[in-house]
Length: 274
Image (cartoon, rainbow, N blue to C red; front, side):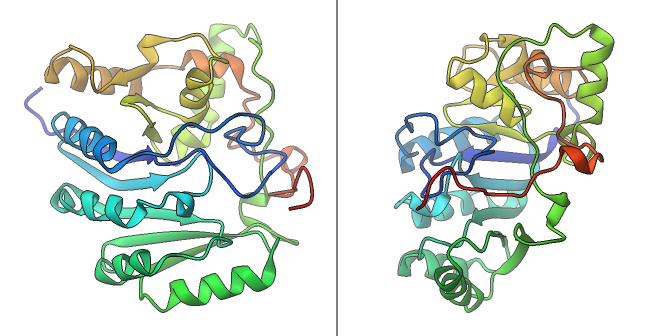
């Protein structure tokens, strides 16, 4: 493949810890023991491996199966991403706006304000704290994208329930419909993500695999650290993006992207008092 390979989005999962306990957490964080936070060396290894295979990505995302601001190395991770600033259009971060950012993180946001998008999920769970954190973030000059997830008229009409992890035994046609109706496919054109180099098209596939809740469908992800060649990895990214479905689609409610408001729920309802 001599043609340049560009992806819409690539996410590094820098933490699986969270200070909230959301009932419909799509990462199932409250129910599972967190993995260790991503270190700077791990971040460097993943970025080097990724950009040795992929030429360009529109959005490079430092995300969490939890709250990214809990990773104390976040300012350094941002710096490391910027080593590859000519290979991506925007660096995206997100926060639930309940963890006060360190002075180092605020400086990084100021320094790279023209390159960063910071998505703020507004849950209104701790209003005073959220307002104080938002004020600090606003002063950095970074581009803030506020997503309203409280009260009426919630963004995307709220959250969806991805359901339990059993095999639904769907037909090939049913799997095809699930995959192609999904917002990951329709809107994001793939939400490639990794915590350990195994890079999946969607969160359901990645999270279920690392927790052992899904079989290890090796055809459904690209392992950046395996022994395959650069060309083989590039072809696998292409093949997965053009697949009619993923095996993980058989273990999902299939409601991500639904326009049925009856299958949307109020976001961030807590399992217990924080």
